[in-house]
Image (tube, rainbow, N blue to C red; front, side):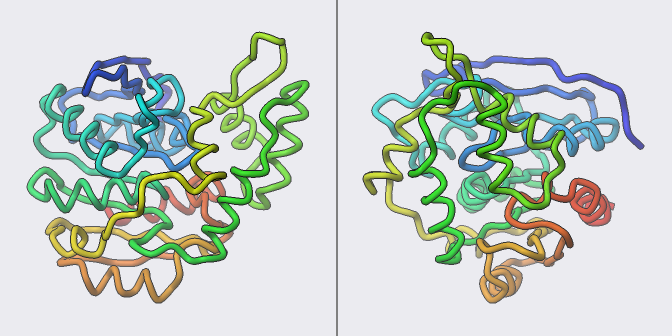
Length: 279
């Protein structure tokens, strides 16, 4: 059942940072917490949030350096920093048990969080990412981040650039993604909303080293769904199958007509797989 409920834009201060999130309600229902990927934002999940907010109290975060959330002091975009933010967020809101869903970077943050806080999770959903990233997908993402122009003359110029990088998502979804991913610059042009340090770290190889996530994954006790896009270049089949074997209660589902951005590429397919998992 879908709903016309609109989210509330909310800010909370944790770890000395202003964290922005969308609160879709409904208070009193089981909590569903959503974490976007490297260049994503809380609105990336709008289709998913709208579908499940009748049955869940859905909270979609802008993680540090993205959307309306503060940029990280000293450029700390390590997994440990993201997990610390999430732990403090849960403490501030009094979240004791919830379903955690993370895509790409958000999926890696979810794995690390789950390994340290297994008792907090009713369910875990990891979307098109694993403890190991397929080299071709990692290279593509780095190339897109490194080569992207810093500014565009107009929204339509920016749209033409990003739309050419995705062969599955609808125009409406791509326009929504770009709307919340960009901002008007003082010179009147359009620039990126997320912290430029994120791009610089990719360009210079100065980002935090990737953590071992196989060990945290082995500590997850709740039912866990691994979602893999049928056309992904990011989550290798062998890695996905090893994740299921490592988990105490893991299962794997493939979503057709989708690459790495599964829930944007094929929202209906992703929502159907998630609904089946959640029962």
